[in-house]
Length: 142
Image (cartoon, rainbow, N blue to C red; front, side, top):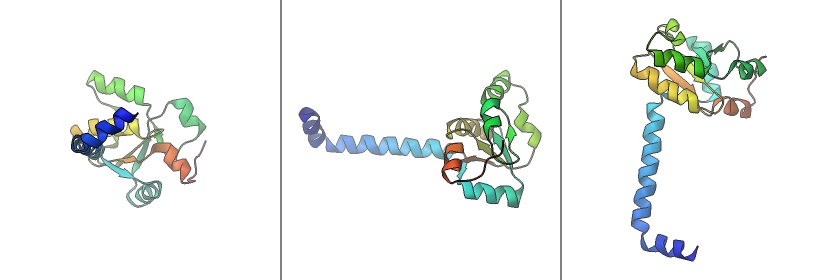
């Protein structure tokens, strides 16, 4: 541990550059994944703009509790459709705004990146996924 502290104190400039590069990479990846919404912003968007909430969790998780009026499209199913090069179930929503939701926000980020490159209109994702939704004490239906 002492050698590590000596290294850090002697190479502080390189450590700072590394930390800045990692932070920049994280910021760019987050930005490419589409706009993120807080649970309250998601509620406002659904009520105001009639956005479609797409839940990417498995059917069993979806049945245990989901956001009101959410549509279940499991990530694995979307991935199979996407990799096959055909139409995905997301394309049926046309020009409507989409809000992608998963358990912690990772799968929704991945899907948002992919469908934005294909020219999807407005794609949002719930920041922190359903974990954040439940943390904000927002309701789930079964």
